[in-house]
Amino acid sequence: MSVPDRSIDPRLLSAAKEEFLKNGYEASSLNGICKAAGVTTGALYKRYKGKEDLFSALVSDTIRDMEEYVSAIGETDLAKISDQELHDSIGMSVEAVEHWLRFLYERKDGFTLLVKCSSGTRYENFHHDWAQVMNKLEFKYYQEAKKRGLTTREVSIEEINVLTYAVWALFVEPFILGFTWDQMVEHAEVLNDFLDWHKALGIVKPATKE
Image (cartoon, rainbow, N blue to C red; front, side, top):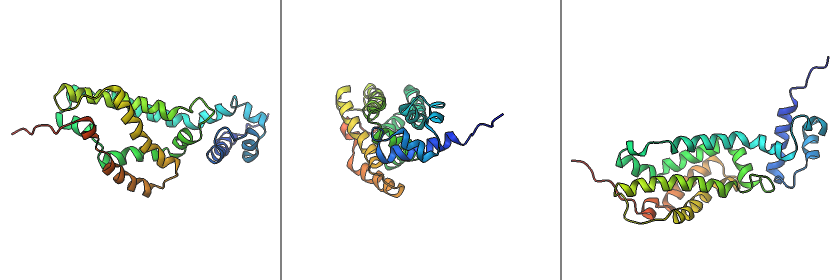
């Protein structure tokens, strides 16, 4: 009775990740991946339906983590947080920017595959689709601020969509360019100086209680 080679999966995934990051999905070949992994195409097809299934295996954990992270934020009962907490949640402090960049950087390969190498897969609109997710979240917080009288500006969900897409690009581009973590930290400071999310949405400071 033959013993299954349990090293095949990690070898395939490692070779596929290297191939996709180097060439992008469309220019990568299963033959090249199999050759780099030292396995046959038959062994690959026993485990994956094809090239896109292999790509999906490499990005699924990153997508799951991002969805869970944003879902947890979205489930926050805004009625139970203070005006100051709401104000700070809408802001883009250096700490907030660096926190989000760190979260993505810890998933650097998977995220880079999604935003740089996914053309030709079902994930090729990931950048745009994720901006839509962030847009709904930002609008929810803006509406709560408006309800509390903490904004001086009427901003439509369409306008916030434009702004969110632009802001999201500022998080995506460093990964496309291959920034190191030190560069990411510097970028967080530059991004904070570049953006004034409170001003854009007309968010005012809450009145201090005596």
